[in-house]
Figure (cartoon, rainbow, N blue to C red):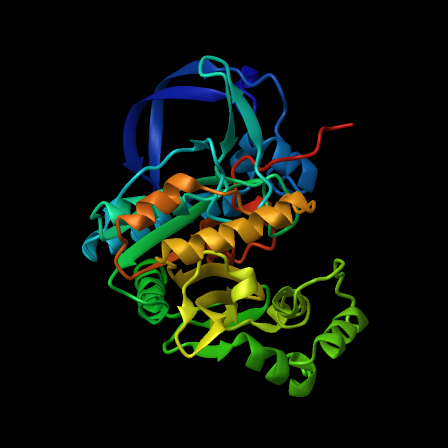
Amino acid sequence: MFSFIDIGDHVGLKGQFFRTKTHELTLLASSVVLLTKSQSPLPEKYHGLVDIETRYRQRYLDLIVNDTVRHTFILRSKIIRAIREFFDKQGFIEVETPMMQSIPGGATARPFKTYHQSLGIDLYLRVAPELYLKRLVVGGLERIYELNRNFRNEGISTNHNPEFTMLEFYLAYATYEDLMDLTEKLFIHLLTKLFNKLTVTYQGNLIDFATPWQRISLIDSLRDIGGIKESALFDSKTLKDVARSKGVELGENEEDGRVLAKLFDHIVEPKLVQPTFIIDYPIQVSPLSRRKDDNPTIAERFELFIGGKEIANAFSELNDPDDQRERFLKQARLRDSGNDEALFMDEDYIRALEYGMPPTAGEGIGIDRLVMVLTDSPSIRDVILFPQMRKKS
């Protein structure tokens, strides 16, 4: 019968276990049953499956022949389990908010649009759960988190997939400074539980998660890391000239805050290999964030960067309904002028704020990028089982 069995077939064996003279556990088979016949030949095990397109399109084959791929997705599962364990122990409760929303909100991104036949209304796949989660804070749920999918109708790259997994959590009576401390604790928990050490190697760089992590303002990072003269950062014309000279594409009448953010993304972000909190973003690129008391043009906001990529975004939440309405109106004007990533007006969210939201801080962590760093994976497609692909020609 063995002459009819090929690599890839599933067989059932019956017999007795014994150990050989070299103490290797072996089965002395008394019967063999063919359970499933493989009709397609597997790639040679020694060489594995190396074609990138085939690996992503036929993940089932990739998992069969590449042990490292199986290990990556097993570790991903453990990472998510450890995250839930951390927040549960911190007294947070896990919640679920709508995937289909009548008004997409919570992030400046282009949404996917669909139509509900029975209700006769347009709906959008969510770009973020933020506004629903903050409604729950208004309702008295003061420690909450959600671990689920977001959808953004944008480009595909090694760091972007249209469908991705996001952790968002909110803590009442806290500020963005409290969340920086909590984020450090979360990562220490993950590294200790999964690796029993505080270092990992990512793309040839040894990344050390020992705390405290560096905290530097966006303006200071442009000066100290980006090498931009401080005087240029506060002069509108000079700032735009510098940005264009660095290859940054600017729109007509681009606000200075957006120019600063684009310049940062272009020249500073790739250099942030070690865990770094970039704090205090311009209010112009932070439409849902609380203003700093001593400088209303700056938001109490941070982003976490590791391995040259953004991992998290967080801020003290804006809970003033009048200020939020004005910012929504400004976003609406941007949308009317052709910016299809600007936020929509959400009257019900403003109504919720009018009932009173306690001082709150919230954060979103990109799970796929986090898994990339912890598994030394160069592309987001390496950590998503079935990534979006272009139609095969």
